[in-house]
Image (tube, rainbow, N blue to C red; front, side, top):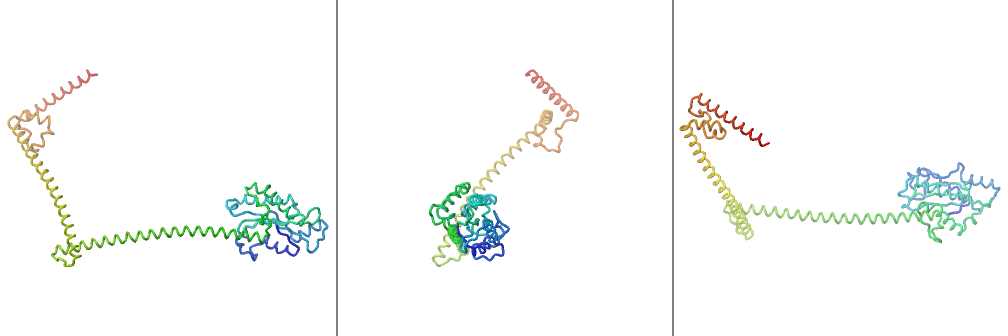
Length: 368
């Protein structure tokens, strides 16, 4: 809380009721956010005019050094406001204003304005220290009454919003507006310093991780280059050895020997594979030759039956055409018999099939 005399009031009003054109001395004021400031309670008159009006109503003519206005700053820390909806914030400041109005009279409140353009939202509440028709700032706001006020404000307002009461008899209870703002600036600086420290630690971790990834990439690159160079040396040494150009240097000769040993091993494996493949092909060819001979024997046997037992062949042919056909010439007559006899054989086979079908149906019927 801070007390003001007549000559102090106009500058305080200018600072409290500022607009976007206000030239701030406080570096914490962000002018592009000033339009967000709002009133919980405001008067159409200036602060001085309203005070003079209240003095006239009470027939008071104060001394030049009299305290005409007492100002309070009500707020909390950033953590309290960061998750608040606008309606919740407005409710908090409205409840605080209602407390002062009930305790000191709403008619004695000059203004209650919320500033949104500084570190954290806060309420500037200005009132005339009038009681029982007289100015009495000294009595109303003595140290004991200020302690009681803070306790009552916490009980009636702070508890509703889960705030803790400040420590009794601490210096924080008696800070002026300038001291309060300075304290908030320091708190903000400490918070920002913590944030920057954490950000710096995170950046350092990321930098160290990036360095590790770079070192790993360099190792992988070197391994690839070494492998490529070794393969190049191997190919060159092998070509020289194949061409008969024997090296005389120890390292070059060693490279040629290693290359020839590796190439010899490769050729041995390739020969072994080809031998296995040739063995498999020989076995397949042998099996095919045997099958071909068996097929030739079967074909000759059927042709002999066709020639010597034409009717028996005809019966077999007409019953199992699919089995016999591959072994005989597709364009030759099935058997050397007269056409009418062939027809008779076909008819006999058909009757035999019908009889077999009837027997099968009969057996099926009796089984049911």
